[in-house]
Length: 223
Ligand code: SAH
Image (cartoon, protein in one colour):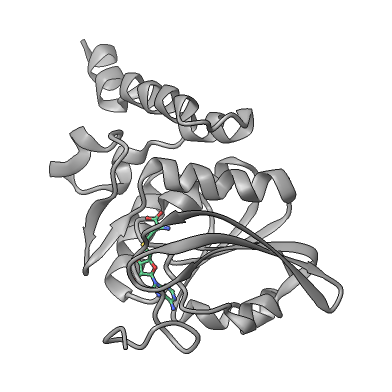
C-alpha cells in the first residue's frame, strides 16, 4: 500500500510520457532526456497544479511569472550541453527552480539569481526539500556574479531587450550564453560564444518569455 502510494505520488509515469513527447518534438540528447526523467517537475509547482506538471505548458508560479514549458527548458539546455558539457553555469531568473535543478542533474556547478524575493524563497524551499544544492542569490541578475566569474555557461530564462553586456563580460573564453533576445511579444533564442575579446552569435527559433527586468533588461513597467 505505502509503496504504491509512493509510486503514484512520484509521477514517474507522467514524467516518462513528457520525455517521450520531448523526443517526438526533436529533443534527442540522451543526457538532457535523462535529466528530464530525473527531476520531479511537479514538486516545483503548488499543490493544485501538480497533476498537470508534466503537460508541455508554462504554468503561473505567482508574482506574474511562469515556470517555462518543458520543451523550452529542454531546447535551451540542449544548446548549452552541446557546446559546454560541464563546468560552472549561471542562470538568470530562478523562478520555480526547475531549470536550475535540470542543470544540477546534468552535473554542472550551478549559480542562479532571482529578483523577486517571494520566488527566491519558494524556489529555495523546493530545491532544499529535494536535497538539490545550487548557489542562489536574490537580486538583479543582469549584473551577474562578478565574484564567481568566469562562467562556462550563462542561461538567461527571461526575455532580454538587447545583449546583456555585463553578463557577456563574465563568460569564460569559449563560454556560451543562451539568451532569448527581442521585444516583449517574441524573442529569438540566441547563443553568444566568447572567443577571446570577440563574440560569435548563432540565432535559433522564436519563443515567448516573461521580461528580463533590471539594469540591463526592461524597466519594471516594461518601458
Ligand atoms: N527558469 C525559471 C523560469 C522563470 S520565468 C524556471 O525554471 O521556473 C523568469 C524569471 O526571471 C522570473 O522568475 C523573473 O522574476 C526572473 N527575472 C526577471 N528579471 C530578472 C533579473 N534581472 N534578475 C533575476 N531574475 C529576473
